[in-house]
Length: 139
Image (cartoon, rainbow, N blue to C red):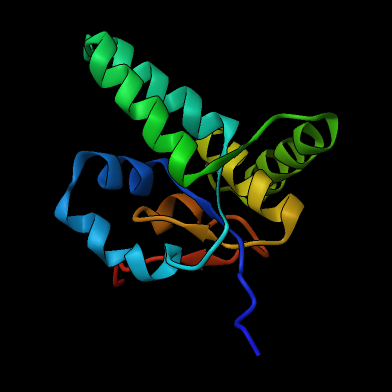
């Protein structure tokens, strides 16, 4: 019987590691192999901002977009996802904690679809109750 392919939401940092060939990408290869790998629209937006801020050439920008298209499916925003984002932000705030809006979008996406987040920045997502986090960063 073949293994069931488990989907994951990949955080911006792990996508960036993979694209840049950063050695930390190897920590996460096993979690992405044979998985349906998704990114939030927010991750795409962050990567686009980095390209603009760092004045990437058209060639490097195209390479990024091709890399994303080959490796990940992008989950777009929706009314349901927006509601989950608002719930994540408010629950974290009520608990006296902080989560950045960008991280809240990624967490909300994972919660909406009931899948884990693969991240190198687990602490960013720690305040989100019920979120499954896959990381190689040891406490």
